[in-house]
Image 1 (tube, each protein chain N blue to C red):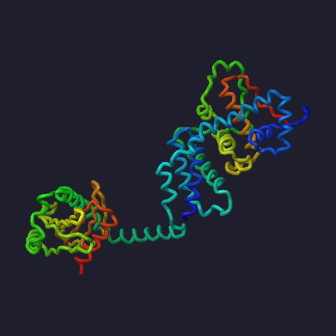
Image 2: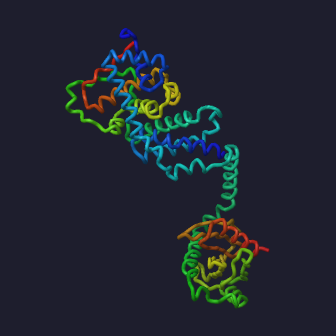
Image 3: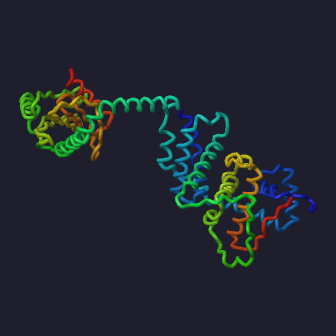
Length: 252
Length: 169
């Protein structure tokens, strides 16, 4: 059937296996009679095979983490997501309005405060023999002493419900004067420290803020005249629970 | 939306394979896949349930790829019109053309030809599907495919003995 007309498009479709069976036979006959086209078709087929041989191994590579993340990241419905974005935006505007002046004056200072709390945690929490200056067995004395030194009536939160017992406390130099550190420990030896300073001013209340430094999680906040920072090498959510308990106890 | 994530992940290996062949670079390829996924998540409400998710994802990847090319610093993209006369590779060039590795040869194809060649040859899409993904008529798919294959053949053979495209009507 050498007189058969075959189009270029059909030759490609033949290579790509997209021709109906009946037509395939006719094209094979055509190619048998046209060596030049047969050679091209063979080369194209080789190209397809070479491409798959070269790139198919990608199919069995394990997926990099960053490609698994985006798909799993957003579980919210689009509408809900927009609502959440709007809510956060609104919250940001309101918070920005109220905290504007405060932030300008204080944000650098509170960050430095959290930083000092972390340093104090890193220095004293691994201490085996002298983690505190005054032990929990002298709690009343500890509280009276530290209250007097930092200038205000301190209270020690009870964290027994969360599994933490008071170890004791110590006096530390802060960037605005003396600061106090209370140390807590759970059954496994995990230690948390609560760093308290007297803000010495008309500090308003702030929300919890979170930072992480050197693997230490810190929640810090200002409540009246005191600034608090709770630090520990524990999960953010667990630490938040601790921070909330402390906050509630100190604000009966 | 766990079903959607699972569906996306199911297509990830093929998106990566195509992106790798398209860009010739692992990092760039995964960037392309990541950008594609993020865009797909944002635009997911536009996807019509029941339609081909693979084709939809490849379409997004094509758009992201084209946008990246256009935005590419210092890269000037000169799309070759299908009517552009392709100079025939003359026999006198044969001794100067070395035999090229497939990946290098691929990178020497214009992007638009590379895309068609890979969607058809590697991804094994039908010409209709490729036309849909690239947003071009099927006739354009055919002419690009033809040019791509002939050029690749010339590059791989390292031979100048290729005749200019012969159109059998």
